[in-house]
Image (cartoon, rainbow, N blue to C red; front, side):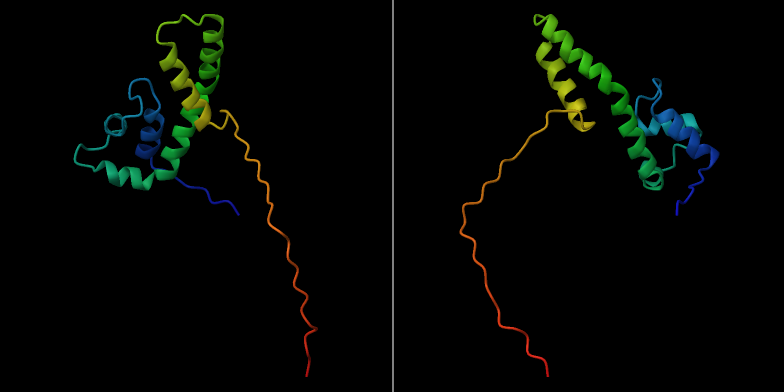
Length: 125
């Protein structure tokens, strides 16, 4: 069963503004753009829209994942790129957070002896 969450017009404006180039993720600025009073606490709005803000953040990172991948590959072609270390670091962070980063595998080897206990049959009355 899916529940449909209905947002007020102001809340929807806030969510739309949050990822805009004008606001760039600043909650207070997004609230101003949406028409919230400066007296409205950021924590109150963030608490009400916590799930939606998280989804918007994940969307933003997903939007930049292709650019991050391209930045990494372009450094392979031109390793003398200015600030290459910073570009690599930022790109890796974005790819890791979107699930596209390096995968690590853990090899687990158990050398402990296996012990089996054989119990007597359960007595029924």
